[in-house]
Amino acid sequence: MIFAIVRTALTALRRDRGALALSFILPVAFFTIFAVIFGGRRDTTPKISVIVVDEDHSRASQQLVKGLKEESLSVKTRPATKRGVDQPEYTATTAEAAVKAGAAPVALIIPRGFGENPIAFGGGSQRSTIQLLKDSSDMVAPQIINGLLQKVAMTAMPDVMAAQGSKYMDEYAGGFTPEQRKRIEQGLEELRKRERSEDSNTQTRQSSNGGMPISVSARDVVGENKNNPMVSFYAAAIGVMFLLFTASSAGGSLLDEAESGTLDRVLSSQVNMGTLLAGKLCYCSLLAFSQLILMFVWAWLVFKLDFIAHLPGFFIMGLSTAFSVAAFGMLLASTCRTRAQLGPLSTLVILIMSSVGGSMFPRFLMPEAMQKAGLLTINAWAIDGFTKVFWRDEPVTHLWPQVLVLLVAGALFFVIARRLARRWEYS
Image (cartoon, rainbow, N blue to C red; front, top):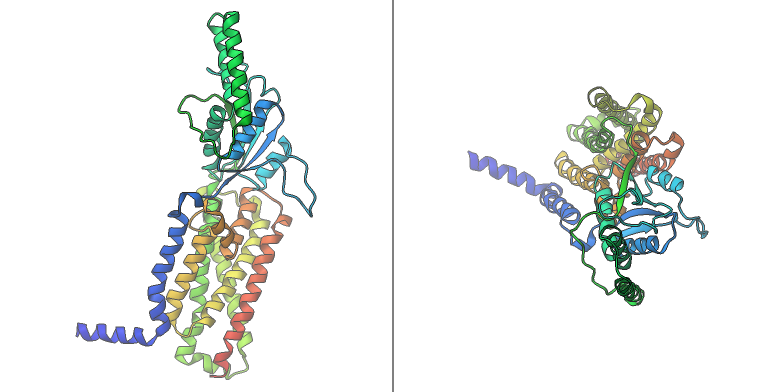
């Protein structure tokens, strides 16, 4: 009897070719996505964007900026050009605003007077301090930038290091003789000549494991006044993925009705397919939005999410996201012919969208190609919108790119679903 049951199930699966193919495509496709994100080569790791403001414009500060550009960083000293016009260089104020707006996770402010005391051994009072402005949603970038600053201080400014070292030796070790001073100056001049003549593209630099020659003062400019701020990110990320599964399941009622014959009876009345799909779209949107409300209210009550102050932005993003995922659920149901096809297909598509779109892993930590691919998903645009609302405290007028994409995508999904659903009208 057991053998007969297994044979019957295998026969049913073999007859449903779509379900059979998706049963084997799903694990391979999902593994491939995560292999690309987590298992890529070292040279596929994304470059960290950092804004650098050089208020000193000394030789030491210029060497420091040059050394940072030679590392695996995307160093920005001015905003991107607009309509072919170069924008003015960042200032401390505009750099902080750019970090708050998400243009970069870190900004470095090199203060005036840095060239006079760029480094200090032992943390003296004359030590110049570089200000590091950070977005606390990215916990990796500030640590990497701080470490690279110390490395660059040891590798990109050898003459400065030697000059400062001799200065401290002269100050604390009792002074040098005139002959010693002369030799030190000659050595420093040789270092400067070598630095000017060497090819930075072919030179191999070694990192130091010593102390921290550059003083850095870090300050959060985004999320510093929020209670448990990462909850807002995860509520949006997990919420969107959950809504996609809910919409897919709700849209699958079309397939249940088609298999049971209920759909034929409904279409034989005065209800046409367009009206039926529109009604189901409204139901799925209402269900998705209600679940989103429940999730964020729970985050507010239990995890202290700052929810009430962001209600306008939440409603705008919530309704737009619910409409888009509901229409996508209608599209998945209209594409499939049986429930057996819908299950693996929806799982495959939703998991891929969620992994690439940032629901499972933050997009800013992905390779650049994967970040761009994420813009093809509902997840990425919804998460970006909710991040603007709950994390960056931006006004609702700044949500128009995310809202526009979600609404247009939802309308397009519904139009395609309506056209695919015509087969039920003529069956």
